[in-house]
Image 1 (spheres, rainbow over the protein chains, first blue to last red):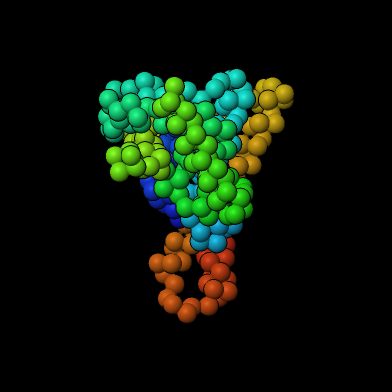
Image 2: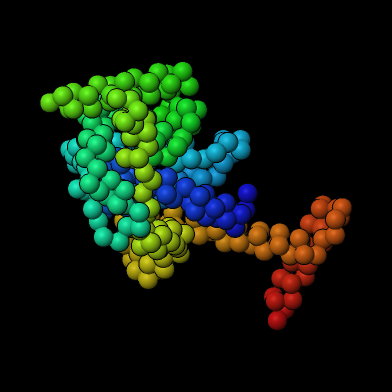
Amino acid sequence: MEKEDLDARFTECYRAHLRDVYSYSYYRVGNHHDAEDLTEQTFLQAYRHFERALDESNGRPLRPWLIRIAHNLAANYYRDRSRKPQANIDAIAEPGAVHTTEDLVEGREELRHVLESVQQLPEDRREALIMRFALDMDNREIARAMGKSDGATKVLIHRAIKQLEGIVAAQGEA
Amino acid sequence: MSSRQPDIESLLRMALQPVEPPDSLAERFEEDLQRIVDLSSDELDSWQADALHDPRTWVKPAAAVAVGTVAAGAVAILGVSSRRRRSQPRGADPVKFLGEAATTISREIQRRTRG
């Protein structure tokens, strides 16, 4: 493929998936500053390997591949900096964002509890829920992004929801 | 009661709303992308300016030259391809076209050498 065509395809891919990659990054790292860096690094990595990804995708959507890149970079981010995810409602308060979650959940303690409970889940369960509910990915897409089988992904999401229900219920009783 | 309390999936959908990236991100990314594309030519310029004097720095600039050469070749190929797209009628023989292109280039080299 000629570079001109490749660049055009990449630009299309970038525009189509910027919000998804940013949302995923945001819910992984919990603040806009690091989410911007993670999104930027994800697309730079994607640019370097874009032609190969196109060849190997056989026309399938590239979103799982992009999210997988972001997933790997986020894992490095925590490993290198010994950080923990910090996605809470307060961290979302950032001027300039068009539709922050703060706008949507302000004053809604219930949603705050849900988000805090999501942070208590094991990493793979938390990620699966972010992909399902923030990005609206189906099981197959999530499976590709996480490098799991469709069946394992279905079980993972089911268990994540069950565990989350348990955490939320326990908080309600406390 | 379940009629008053939304289920956990509905709550998750409300809590995990997609987050819009700031406009500045698109600008930053365009700049970074341009830097990557320009990297080989920048390094080439740097090499031409001072790296010749220090063999220890030849490895990186040499890679830039290689990349630059490939890029130049690609540009040349793209140029030929686009000219071919413009001039070649559907169904024309590509082998014949390449033969004609080679003759044209050969003539041009001879003309410049004489000039």
